[in-house]
Length: 261
Image (cartoon, rainbow, N blue to C red; front, side):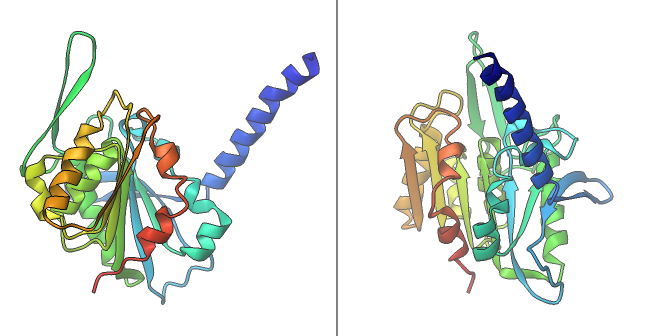
């Protein structure tokens, strides 16, 4: 019994080291312009050839992975794109930018009641946050690269990153071939900007951090406009519905099947 208790933390530590080693395949980089600085990690395809064109996916993390270490943003989703089969079947450039701790991907007003329960009030229109402004600059920088296939540009994210996905879509509505948003939200007044983009929206029915109605009203508004939208509501999932969403076997095939005309 003592032997088993001893080996369990050892095995956990070995698994942690293995994951950390794998995530090193994402190269460290930083976007810097006159007014913006944004750290990001970038994964190039195996046998990358700069003379060829590749799909590009921007993945936006949640609030818990904010900061400046250029590491945390890979915690959720980073391993998905390192799977051997995904690298083979969906050869692409994957970018994980990191939002500064003192900013936010989306333009949203967050308040809390006496119990600490948060409420999200999404802004219609408005200026981008400092983090979003930097992200827009990074997107433009990547798109200027000759190896970026402009017919296959995608974005997806979770929680704050799900909110940021909607925000990025409305700020660049003609750019993205498809997108996915996990436990995010937006102002329904912004939907008119991106309803033509194929979207897969996910949420947990028991989410008590970002309640599912934030996704449901966006889905309803998109459907009113005849949009190409998929909606998956996990009956037993709380806020970490990204665990289920990122494990969906059809997520990447669905995403990369879309191209801009």
